[in-house]
Length: 397
Image 1 (spheres, one colour):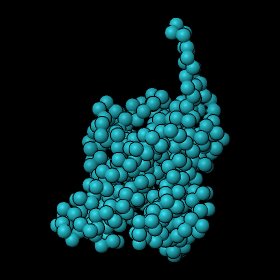
Image 2: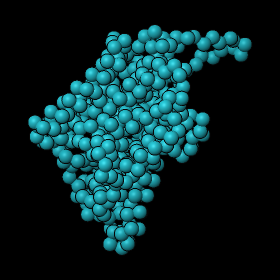
Image 3: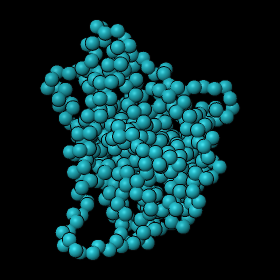
């Protein structure tokens, strides 16, 4: 019933919402660090990690659905093509940001006389970036311009392992995913009690969120193998959908702390809250893409979702730039007006840069792997083969 979905309607809106939460989070933290404003107590500005976990769930969901669909249509999995698709989508922008952040920006700052010192040099960190461990740069050097790259490194490790695991152990994939979740939660409980905060192993275990990706992957298995309409299941009927779809945004936007055991278990428990939230994210994904698939997409939200990878990757640099450009205005403008100007300028410039990047940089690499259709006479009859390799939809999670 759900084995041939070419496009999940509504996911772009969710992507744009999540990317926006990350932008707001870093706008607030950098603004506070530089003494511009303090928005960190507002719930809307405290969801950077929650938004990244949503991207992890979404990535696990889409990548696993793609593999299931490919195996169903071709009878096998092309690991080579899987890797090439990921390389074309992820690597160009990833390495461009590294070049900008470690080489071009320090040079530009020196030329124009801006007093900004990077917390590290390329010679100190090149191997972390090259081998997709930018998370260790974050651990050793703290917050920095290229901080968003840490989650890209996590996803790259997941992609590297997931395709061969799926291909050779497909019949046991649900058991493998369940084991990943159980083992990771058990490890987090042990780490919480026995490891120090500054322990590198504990830091990596907390941030390599394979259990959230496993949740998304389980959701894809559930959807792909569903024999009945998802919306007919009691869990996805309208009253329940309304409650969940209101509950999650309320928490994300306001970080409300309700004195209720169930609320605290879902949202405020260090080990289990991220996992339970990932289940709610998966529920949102399934609800919006399947149960509300007949709704027309908002064009702006769809556009925002299509450039969300660029928004996520470029926004940190834009926030730094806005700090340099707008800081002199702080003394002349009322604080509410200054905060509004800062946030709107950051969002607008980030969207413009992300659009330019997607249109003229990222799309160039995405087109490299696509075969140009051969010219055929007008009366040529085309036969669609069942085993044709499916094109990748929703190019990035």
